[in-house]
Image (cartoon, rainbow, N blue to C red; front, side):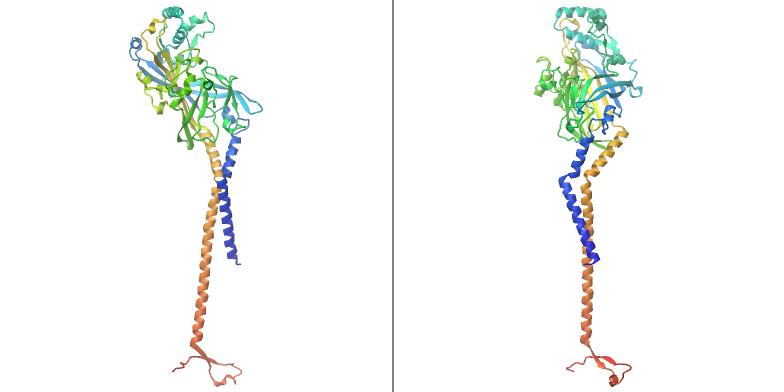
Length: 520
């Protein structure tokens, strides 16, 4: 066997080995499975893990924008006209969030923490000065008091007289700063003197700057990667007690700050939010890309806040059979000290059209009013998010309060917020690097198959050239043989002279002469 033949056989053997091994790894998904298992072990809430520090102190900047609805026809509305509002905002604050008192519990399978938030005003991202700009809106403290007394006519009549004396109407005009961070309400101040449990200061974000929502206990994800970041208990309990069914009171999912890796499009993502006192769910909408990072967009579907007729599972969120609101609304008074507060998406997005048409100035648009999460499906990392919610007040006629006599039931918008975040460049670079490693390792079998394909091409080329060279060699041999035969047939040997026997010095002389034709 020649050296060339050995080389051809060696190339063929390498080619076959690469193709067999590569295809076997692809079919068995060995490297993909290896990387998935590696991610499951790396993305856990334990000291020293890849994500623990960023979970405790998220690096991307979070912004909170507040938009208020300024009422422009209070007097006409109280006389029966359709209310008119104009949107004012945003008033933007940088939100700093971090987890305090982080402690590993239950043999490291759980971690407890307090989610602390603080806010700093950003004038360059706002439309005005919150300490100067005034908003005319619903007098929430007055409506909270009236709601408490709606079934007690005599007390209601007494409070009605007190409100008139104090100048507390159904609407109030306050600065943005007061509405957000608190002001002393005259009615609450008067009531607190006889009822110490009544807080005399009211604000939509009162006592929420530099504070937390209570202790959370999370799953670390070590036992099951699907449980990564899932809330086990809130304030020491695994369920809430605000609603009327076990399912509605369940605490499901994460707190919205962490999601398990290896997401798929068919799953529902559950999020427990203390602001709504309940868990909601989100479903896949579409694929997007943020700073070059592929992501799945998850959004809450209409069914989350659908009426009990449209979604029977939501019946448990009805405070009573008589207090069951329509699609797009959630009355959260059980966890708001009885105040008639109703939550919705901004401008009644995804709500029954009747709520939109009842207020002049409502214009729901999915682009500006939809809540969504953009998550990288491989790592579960949040690359972009917008949490949008609206605060409304349920207004209607209340016995004992003459000022409400002309009112029909209406869901009146007060303000909405937009809490947004986009992954920062440094974090995006780390995600890119991790995704590159995952892609290279997962696709390593394809690289092997590719090398096998290249070796196959080389093998075929070598075989072709070897066959070509053999054919050339055969052609040369055949030509030489044919030429030699033809010469022997056409010539004969004859002695040149008679001296061939006598000339011992010069040897034999031979001459070539043409063969004579025997028939000549």
